Image (cartoon, rainbow over all chains, first blue to last red; front, top):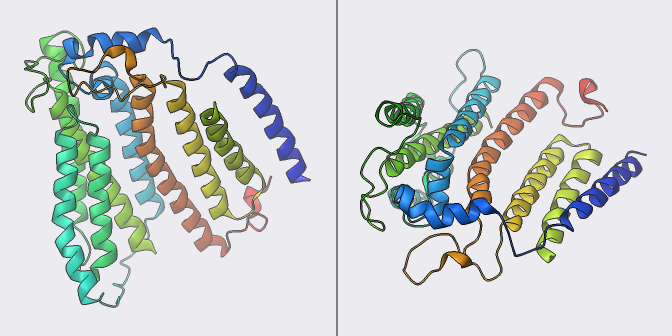
Length: 227
Length: 113
């Protein structure tokens, strides 16, 4: 009975969506805002990666909201998983020598790669969100591979996350002071395709990278401790 | 065209799983499929035939052959949000399992539909 009802519902949904998508030809987008961003993006923001200039500059306020949603999800997770009292430390088996050495060897390289990705967010594909996710994957590797490594410093994650969020908001508010609106790009734009260019975009993306990396690592740490 | 069909197919499969399956973990997997389908559909709407990524890495690239950066920017943030909300859903599932001792939706009385 449930299956029949849900198939009928999905069929109605499919008909509606097909009716809408028929009007949108594939492969020839005609949006005006795309043309505007692509033609004026470098001139306005100095970032060669137009996606970055949309994320951090044109729609920076939206990104601040998204970062807040991420923060709320992480807080909600630790609130749901919180348990009274101190849980006893689990006596895990120590992982084998090859696994242990490999994890310890790979961990700094993964951190370096993540840092590279979020520092070059305004020049190459990448940015704060992707770099943060890579850093969190490095922490996940050590949590799974090196059991002897022990728990990570949770307070450190929280402090990093809060400071990174504060940097984002403070940089935006300074724009209010210098240019009259939130997230105004008040630093010199520099020459495109150089590392120190695009004004406040690299600063904000580095802050986002730290924030996402520490938040996702905290989430993983909470989940692993629970299992 | 095939891209529309594929991404919308993912959405349909995800919704079907959410509506019919009774195991909570399977429902969460369905939600994730649903989310992935939406990301792909959004990216598809901004595609330009023969277009490249909107990055001016060398001078030969012309602006007419670049895909729409706006859906990419939206999806970029939405993926990370999706990971965090998925983790939140899994943590709720863990709590439900500790409380009821099962993940079957028929046995958890408050969740029946």
